[in-house]
Image 1 (cartoon, rainbow, N blue to C red):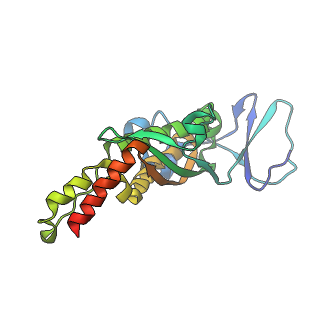
Image 2 (cartoon, rainbow, N blue to C red):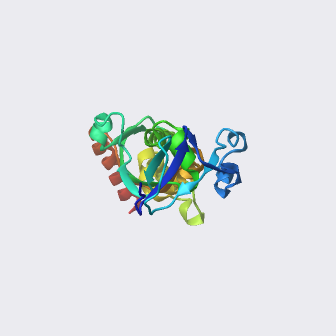
Length: 229
């Protein structure tokens, strides 16, 4: 058998992965796990077969190949049901003031070569599991997101008028989209140790309210701009 340049492989002998005698608890990425989670995600380190070949194997040995190339998917993608989330194009979420919004964006990920055991044998369908993990964190952050409050002596007079717009959660989210993306990157950094998948980036590009709310929201923002002028 051969292994391509963008692939890595793991050999199993009678169903048992070939190991090198170490644990993932010795890898630096374990610091991103909470102390109570470390025993749960303690996986053995396996021998990784590098690109090249031809290699030889016995009939009772099996080769598991994975691609380590960076992949990009829509954050609304559902591998189990392609028709979910409006055909995998928009993800629904609820804000802290009970407004249903639609999220669009992308996720870049790749398989972690240092934790192939978790990817191959820890979870049956790792992509499905990791996407569900990401979406659950994103919806929780959207539901509890609050914009940072910053005011100084010059802003004291305008505090009451600013409260009108900053109190609307979708405005807070849109103004602090970069902070939300950075927050999601920090939250998902432990996926490397949990599931053997590295998140290169999560980019939320659009936050849209329902059509029946859009006109009212635009009127609020217009009124605030007139008052500020």
